Amino acid sequence: MSISPEILARQLARETHARQQAESLLEQKSLELFHQARQREQALAELRESEERYRLIVELSPDAILIAVDEEIVFANSAARLLFNETTANGLLGKNLLELTTEQDRSKAVQELQRVASGGRCIETEELAMRLDGSTFSVSVQRVALTYQGKHAAQMVARDISARKQLEHQLAHQASHDILTGVPNRQRLTDILEQALRYADRYATPVWVGFIDLDRFKFINDHYGHHVGDHVLRTVTERVRSVLRNGDTIGRFGGDEFVLLLHGAQHEQLNAAIVERIMDAINLPIVFDGHHLRITCSLGLATYPDDGENSQSLIEHADVAMYRAKESGRHLCQFYTAQMNQQFVERNQLESTLYTVLDRNELQLHYQPIVNLHSGHIVGVEALLRWDHPELGRIPPDRFIPIAEECGMITKIGAWVLQQACMQCAQWNAAGLGPLRVSVNLSVRQLDSPDLVANIATALKQTGLPPSLLEIELTETLMMTDIDRALHLLQTLRKMGVRVAVDDFGTGYSSFAYLKRLLLDSLKIDQSFIRGLENDHENQAIVRTMIQLAHNLKLHVIAEGVETDFQLAFLKQWGCDEFQGYLLSQPQHSDGTGALLSKHQSSLLIT
Ligand code: C2E
Ligand code: CA
Ligand code: CA
Image (cartoon, rainbow, N blue to C red):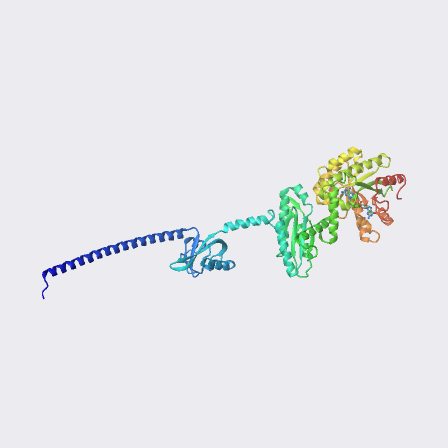
């Protein structure tokens, strides 16, 4: 069967249409594809660009940035390489991230990584980081979790804070240490002591607290200047530090006061050698700025747990013991006893009432006659201070004069003594009981006072006592501690015509050369040599030598503390010039002494 041409033409037309449709669809689709490809290419380019930008930011960041997958470092920027001192680009790659953290901070770092991995907020921590060579430094660190090349990763951003830490450390040190000497200050000392006490409680070991006060430091400061005083403080601290055992501490409590913390083993007693070493170290000569100085100290000790239950009471009690050491003559060490506390309270009571003692007329002078052994006449009296305290009764001068020296009242009291003694002596001379001289004792602090010479001149002028009838007594130790000042003072006194005696001779360390240069008039043999004269052949020899020595130096010799006929006879036999002592009379008030003087005016006391 043949197909009509019409049908064929229609069929062809249909097919042509379908092809045309298909072609147009194809064209459309390929256009779409082309667009999509272009878009993708563009997006890829953008991505590449943004990645490059990110890489640049990360690479050039001043903070160290490290990325780790399963703790293994897979990326480190140049700041990280610089921070951790790794010069090669790959130096850090492949290492474990935790290798860059010190042992002490490692568990903290692990915890932090886990915390951020489970979605924790990113926070900044301060840690001690470690370079691969083992050196350490302080960093501030931030850790975050992220995806790196499709894997879970951790990023660490670190910054060097060593400089800031060092500054903080310096500031903290300054706040807790004494600037001049560099040792712990009062606050820090208390903290260290508290820690030491906790340790002592746990292990039942003793702790000793020592309180050191330098003797006569004020004098050094006042007379040689603060720069010398500062040098002394630094030197003393350094020397003590060098003799302390490991773990023991010296701190500066203030001024010239230092506190020691000494540790002991169970049942251990404080080793005397340690204390000796410390005191000897302080006593070594100090040569500075042309001055030759010799420092001594007084040291008080309190033991934990016996003498105090906390840092405050231990330091206080060591301080009390130090005061006692000072009162007993300086350059001494003294352990605290409960009894001292009572005495300390009393001492404070004395000090607080001492300021107004003159206003309340509680002081009086007693006089002890001095007899010439050649003529048998009373030729002088020594003025000796007494304090009648309203509550504590009569206080001997040995107790209150050191306190008056410390609180500065001695200058006023000394001036009063001079005035009073000169007046009394002038009266006795005017009453025809003379010629009679009066001996007045001077203390260290008076010697330091610029008013001393003026006070003496005023007393003489106002009372009319001839200067030759006033004898100033200076102890041997006092003269020898500051020879230059003593020399200067003695020259001035000599010009005024006032006599000078060296008191308590034999208890200090006089050099004969100085004794000669000092322009003295008399030498008073200390009563400790007279006391045992009866049975002590050594003392007999010493006293004989002292008399001879004095005479060779053209000095007048006075023996004090003469209590027995034997002593008197001995002194007379060996040519001693004068004596005083209970054998003739105890010191007594002016009425009693006046009566004694009248009674013996014509009669010889000894023959
Ligand atoms: P000192 O200058 O050595 O005085 C002698 C001391 O020996 C006095 O003690 C006196 O009472 C005592 N004494 C006298 N004869 C005998 C005796 O036969 N046997 C005994 N056992 N003792 C005797 P006092 O009055 O207690 O004075 C003690 C110290 O106080 C004095 O020692 C002196 O250093 C100081 N002192 C006294 N008055 C003053 C003063 O006005 N100013 C200063 N700065 N110190 C003074
Ligand atoms: Ca005296
Ligand atoms: Ca004396």
